[in-house]
Length: 347
Image (cartoon, rainbow, N blue to C red; front, side, top):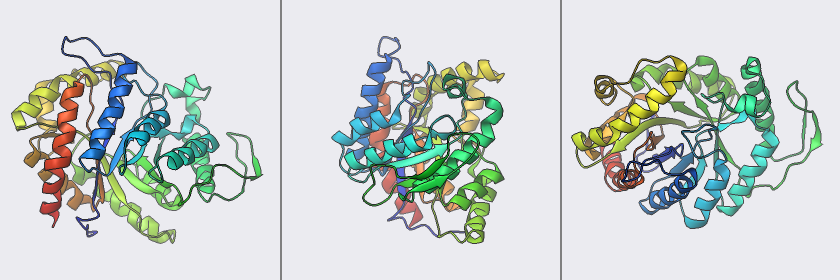
């Protein structure tokens, strides 16, 4: 088990910019949702959280398709919090442009940019940008290889089958202290090994089942780092959650949003209709939802960190139609009450 220093533990937040409902039950516009996301990042910075991540999506339920622009707006209004993606869909993007955008974000944020790269659990970006789903694996493998070379910030000579070759290509702007990069992993051994081989941090997306189920992937990743002569690198966790004053209040506030999101996506993927019984299981010890009072959520986060030897936990605080006001309160409680409890428990 990797020992975690509570003083260096990173606790952060992720959002996909879900379209929410206002006090009258009406859906908020995408434009207002984006402005709300920036306000949420400002509050996360104010309450001392470590990271604020914004996901990339290209579908009606989510407002954010260009996370770096939203993060740049947040950078102008924040001081300490690190800003990044959750995730950047590298498979349907160009590694050179991704590096350019994030090195620019790193400049405007004074060195606070991070990139979390992933294949994407949604496929809308593939036909939108002219990629074939049959190339799903090959696209990510090649582009991750190229992006790894770009991170050296030296001229790159590279060739592959999915994009044009590069011959001593230099990419600008350069960062002042390098760009912190992770790979988001849903739970396959190959993904953990690949992250280790290229020297990325491992971000485990745990959205179902107990965290202990992912312990073998964290262990495999650490063994693979040794195999590839990589230095020790962090393991992080991304999981959904919501915090309110009591467990019952948090459950009642969060359920409608989880139900709406699961049923919307589930209709496309053949999932069964979401119900309260499943929700109550998911918020329990064997589930992947961190929903409850500050004490309940802190205990569950601490257990996950100890189980996986993780040094970062990012709670996806936006789910479905949960209102902006309730999300702000959840962020406040996460920073002022959950974070100190987690560190106390781990110490």
